[in-house]
Length: 148
Image 1: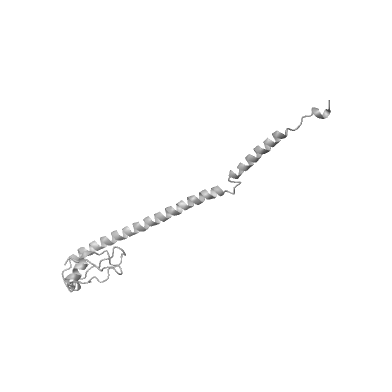
Image 2: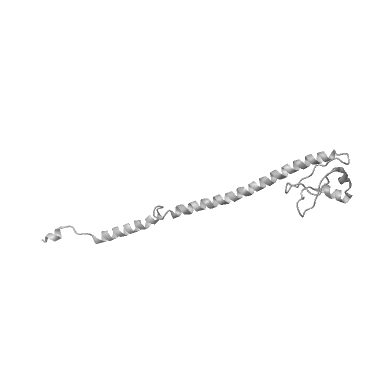
């Protein structure tokens, strides 16, 4: 009997299978965040940032709408007070409170400042002032309201 034959010999098929298993397991390492450079984590964070940007734009839009609504309510209240004050003016030199545009919040140009000026308006001009004070911006109709 040969002395070499008595020693255990390597099983090359087992070695090959082990290398295949190692190769398969090493190929899965690319799924680890530390190995892929955190690419998936970066992608997920970018998706969150994109959603936050969208949410921020929506909140900005709501904020603008609330500001516009607040301005319109404030102007409507101011115009209501002005209309009440103007309705009690009796003398020709009585000052009239100005009205303000609901769209811009600015004083509507062209409104009479005294009862005398209001009295000098034609019935057509007076009718146009009574209709609406919402479009007192450039290019729109200048309209004020007076109870004369």
